[in-house]
Image 1 (tube, helix red, strand yellow):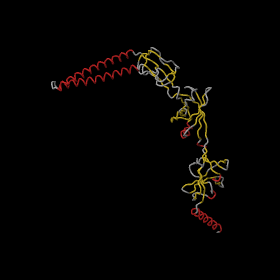
Image 2 (cartoon, helix red, strand yellow):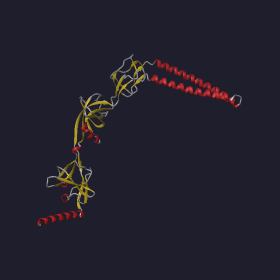
Image 3 (cartoon, one colour):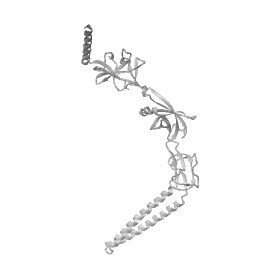
Amino acid sequence: MHIKYLFCCAFLFGVLSTKAMAQNPIKVDVMYPQQMQKSQNIQLPGTVQAKQNAQLASLEAGRVASLTVEVGDVVSKGQVLLNLDNQLAKLEVAGAAAEVKAAELNLQEAKRLYEEVAKLSAQQVVAKTLIAERAALLANAEVELARVKANHNLQQERLKRHSLQAPFAGVVAVRNVDVGEWVTPQNAVLTLVAQSDLRLSIEIPQQYYNALRETHQVQVTVIPDTDGVDPIAANLSRLVPVSNFQTRTFTAQIDLPDSLSTGLVVGMSATAELTFPDSAQAAIILPRAAIKQHPDGNSSVFTVVNNRAKRVVTQYTNMPDDRVAIYGQPANQPYIISGVELLREGAVLDINEVQDTGQ
């Protein structure tokens, strides 16, 4: 009987305490914590590449009459690299020019004839059919002149295409033809590689893909594998979201600043050291007073949801200045840092002060 009495008293006390907590909010201080982010570094080999690397072909079929460059030559944009035999093309241009001259003379004669009958028409001494005939001849002459002019332009363009020009500045890396050979637009005759706008291409293991994709900016130190070139500070420029099914890696590219990459050439090797946040090691920093210890050895902190306490069981690591580090918890919500001994799940709160670390 005595035991039942004590149990009933304890139960009533708990009920009364809960009601008291609901009626009397607990005053607490809260804060938005500082976030501590650890970084991880990985080193990967890479190859220097040019953003512009083209296999050039002639725009017309023909016999190579002259080559103006050799492998290793540095060329500028628009420089002539190769000439085809263009004698037939020149004759076509000359013939088209003659047709233009003839069409211009025909147009002048058609205009004269039309103006002649137009004057007589004012005196009503010519038939209307003759006027219509002369007008038709004039219109036909104008159309013919436009046609032969278009053909002349076409032949001039074909003549121009007998010379192959550099589409960008660079160095001639490969020569596939010699003077006297027959080439077609399907045959690559030269390979041109730009010396500026270089980038380092690396293959990154797939386990790092999400961490790199979610990081706003990944710092990279490019360490050239050649003497006399200092390390280059850069950023990860792009990730190619396609994994190689054989190596389980994906390609990433690092743009190299022109002012710093003068000691690098296409094809060289270099090592890329990537530094990016380790999301698994992200932690929030709270005062030690935010921790509530439990008899079973566990610990917890309290956050605020709809002005009530929400308990989060977690482990912590001691830090200097009476602080603790808690892993795996978000930093964008308020944590209670005072009066935690009085708190339980769902307790109504009276928030006394909000501390914001500014992070």
